[in-house]
Image (cartoon, rainbow, N blue to C red):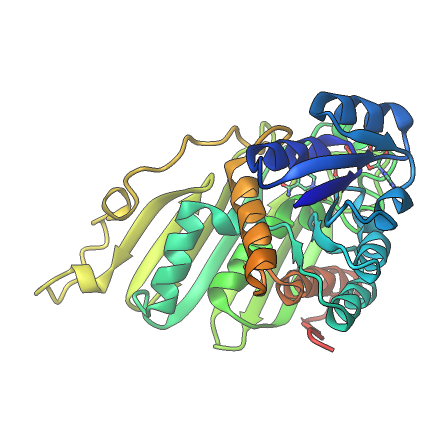
Length: 357
Ligand SMILES: NC(=O)c1ccc[n+]([C@@H]2O[C@H](COP(=O)([O-])OP(=O)(O)OC[C@H]3O[C@@H](n4cnc5c(N)ncnc54)[C@H](O)[C@@H]3O)[C@@H](O)[C@H]2O)c1
């Protein structure tokens, strides 16, 4: 699989590291960035060619797949161009910043034969995999509620480091769209179809950004389950991303990507009174990775990114859909769009999802 990376910034480096890790099955052929020095530096480090225009990747027969790592509001235009050129696409989250743009990607994917996945690497964390599987197997019983909190800190320097950060046009939002989307995706993956959102947002700890640095919301799911969402980049010094999922037969807590609590009634053998303090997390997932730095964004190799890369390459080889589909990405984006609409109007708003055309 011969790759081109478009966008040689923070996350472009992670993608380059993933591709190298998959060698010899994967090779980085080209790095394109509209800032020539960035393209050159990353390309040189990986023995690839450099280009300033993304279009350089689309017309070449020796490139099979394109990794799109540009600012979020530029994802759809590049993904559509790549798909229409017959390239497989792995695009960073969010799929784009508007549902309209996301639907253009879905349409382009549907009219071609190439595979597209949108990065949501935390689905591949062992903790997320275990909890999702437990839910599918009914071990948590009827799901009743979820609590997702991303209490991170981003300095003013972070927002000043790129004109696009914290802008509606290119970031598409603030703490929720950029940082919180991973946890929104996990919450929706666990709890099912979201139907209604009531939300408030604010910008309290940063200047010179158009968007929120805190978002809170209540989400109602089709099953009747209720979710609470909290995403902020204004929680100094930056804590962890935490997800709680509760059902009438079990509960799970993922904190900082690690399973910190897991308890199901099926393990209370012979006992009628569930012993809520019996935390089985260490038994069901004993070999967890290290706790990631609080609020960190990957800039180097991330194991979860690598797992998603493996899935992407296998999906292409096996002619199957990837684990994270365009529909999954649209669903998470639709929740975030509903949060912003509810915060703007002060009303509860429906979550409008149009997935497959
Ligand atoms: N999955 C994750 O955990 C994660 C982490 C960080 C960032 N991201 C996502 O990755 C994307 C990029 O974020 P970043 O922090 O790396 O940004 P960045 O600003 O560090 O890098 C973006 C790069 O894209 C280049 N670029 C912009 N438009 C271009 C174009 N049309 N053609 C070629 N190059 C172009 C810029 O010059 C810049 O070098 C965002 O969508 C962000 O949400 C995901």
